[in-house]
Image (cartoon, rainbow, N blue to C red; front, side, top):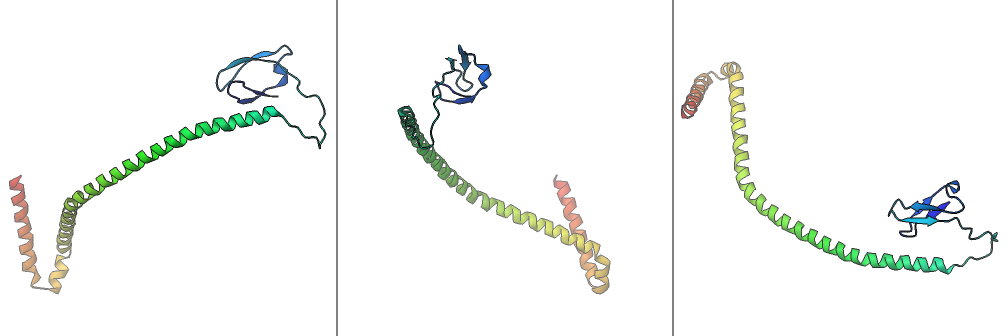
Length: 165
C-alpha cells in the first residue's frame, strides 16, 4: 500500500499487515511529521473500462502544486540571475588581473628563460668539445691550442667564482 504524508506529500510503500484496523501512528522519514493513519476503503466499486473518473480533489491539488512550483521558481530565477551576474563580474575581474600579471611576468620570465637556455646550451657545448677533443684535433690540427686555451679560461672563471663566494 502507498501512504502519503499529509505534511509534505511524500509517498511511502508500506505492507498492509503492519497497520491494524484501528490505525497506527506513522512518522514521515522526510519531514519527521507524526500522524495517525487509518486504513480507509475509498472505492470498492469495480470500474468499467469506458467509465471516466473525474475528481475535483485531484484537479485542485494539481493546481495548488503548480502554483507552489511557480512561486518557488520565481525567487529561484531571481537568485540564479543575481548569482550569474556576480559570477560574471568576478570572472571579468579575474581576467583583468591575470592579464596584467601575465604582462609583467612575461617580460621578466622571458629574460630568465633565455638566460637558462643559453647557459645549458653553453655547458652542453663544452662537454661535447671535451668528449670529442681527440677526434677533433686529428681532423683539425690547429684546434688543439684553441681548445687548451678555452679549457684554461673556463678553469680561471671557475676559480674566480669560487673566490667570490
